[in-house]
Amino acid sequence: MTGACPKTGQAPQDGCEGRRGVSVGEVLAGARDEAGLTVAQVSEQTRIRQTIIREIEGDDFSACGGDFYARGHIRSIARAVGTDPEPLVAEYDSARRAPDAAGGEPGPGSGNAGPAGRRRGPLRWW
Image 1 (cartoon, helix red, strand yellow):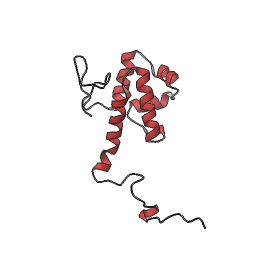
Image 2: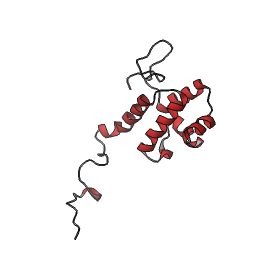
Image 3: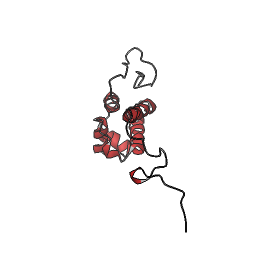
Image 4: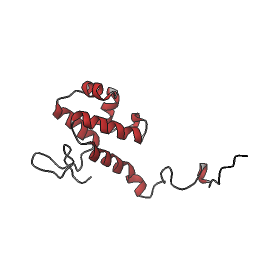
């Protein structure tokens, strides 16, 4: 992340620390506390289960059901607590891509490989 303010997404200013070393969950939990909201209130506003909100605030996104839903939950929670969701989603994405950039396994949709790395040919309908 570029050290953006969790409230505005802009460069850090007075009263707004840089976000380096602060996780998505920590920013959301801090913004919720600053807004004076409970997990139950955020859950009611967003229709996201309280257990999932608590897990996201603890940086556990496994209960979200995949990256697509995790991004949606981050956006919904951020809006409910009054913070800009886009820097948080970008941080989530960059944290998720870090292992792939270091030479890990290619992600889904990369290439035309089928099971066990076999190359698939064109579909035949006969």
